Image 1 (cartoon, one colour):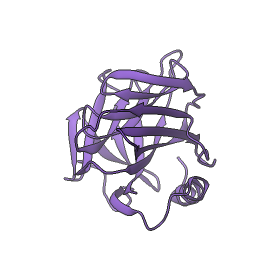
Image 2 (cartoon, one colour):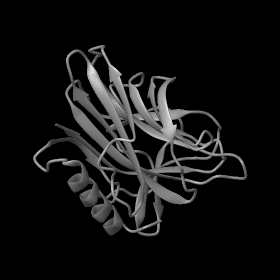
Image 3 (cartoon, one colour):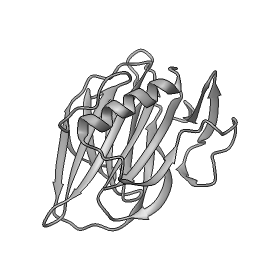
Length: 212
């Protein structure tokens, strides 16, 4: 895995590429650097799955093991119903024709999820477990992938915008996938999701959730 300085460079590039202001209010931030291997910090709540902090060389990450083969999620941060943007990076590997899936979401366990689905070759937006829209996306096994999900207010409802890019690259200036929802929705926490269908662990790192 790459060192944390790569994270800082990539995040800075993503901020300037998308106009993400440094003055935005940080709702939650965690890079796991100060945490030893072992249980998750108390601000995380596993919906299912044996999530834990893992240490790999100089990197500290949140890890979802490669078994059992199902979909697992973990909630974090405060309940929020305001415009916001959530960014994190993800690492997984394929085994033959078996691929993991991974993503992040806003507005609670049943909220809006931005998901990379390598088996489909798509970047998708979900509402709960229901796929809403997807676009072609090429995922690279054995490397970090950044995801950013943004919720912007419109009348009526919300606009969901999703971006994905490889470690060392720059966040796209325009969202690759977009969905409009006329519903006002309810407040909820942010979440990370993983499905280790390849039988190998999924790593999560560098969470940053900001109100806009």
